[in-house]
Length: 120
Length: 120
Image (tube, rainbow over all chains, first blue to last red; front, side, top):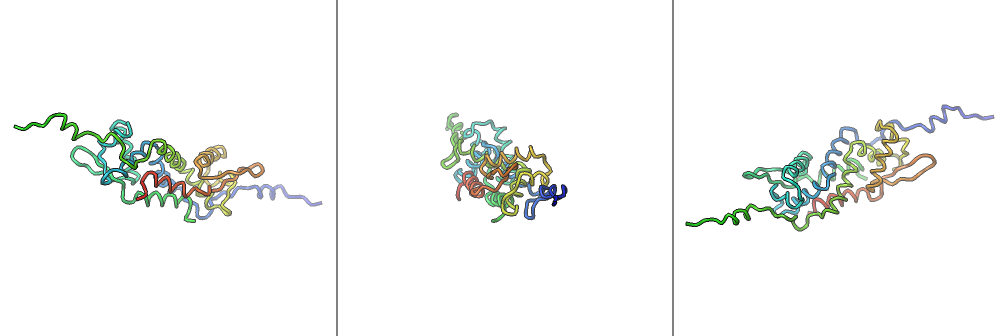
C-alpha cells in the first residue's frame, strides 16, 4: 500500500512566499503608486488635460477654476499634488501661479507602466 | 483725460470660463481616473507586478498573499479593483482564483495617458 506523507501534500499546496524575480520592489512600488495617485482623481485629470490643451501649453491658475467648477484653494491643492508628482511645473507671474505640463510627464507615466507590467 | 472703463479691466482679468478645445470631457476624465486609481495603491502595484512576472503569466491568489504580506480577503479586494479596471483577468481553477495581466492592460494605460496629455 502506498501512502502520501501529509507534509508532501502540504508542500504541494504551499505558497511561493516570495515575489518572483523581476517583480517591483516595495520602495519603487510606492513611487509608482504616488505617480498614478496624482491622476486618480477626475478633477486632476481634467486640470492636467486643460493645461496640456492650453494655447502655449501654459495656464494661469486663474483660468483653471471656471472650467472645472472648483474654488481656487481646491484647484491649488490639486495642482500641488500634480506638481509634487512631477507632472506639472509651476512658475509665478505677478500675483498668479502658472502651470505647464512637465517636460518628462509622458515619460514618467510610461516608465511607471513599464515598472508594473515589465517591458514585454 | 483717458479713463479705462472698469468693465474693460475686469474682462482683461477674466477667466477663460471654458476648457480649451481638445481638453478631456468630464465623463472620460472619470474613466481615466478610475484606471489610474486602480494603481494608486502600492499593494495593487506590487500585486499586478507579481502577476506580470509570474512564470506562465498566471498567478493563483493563494500565491499572492505571502509576497505582499496581506490577508487573502485584502488581496481579493485589491484584485477585484484591478479586475474592475480591466487590468487583470480572473479565472477559477478548483478552489482558487487565478489572475493574469489583461491582454489590453498596457494599451489601457497608454490610452489613459494619451487622453490626459494628448498625443503630442
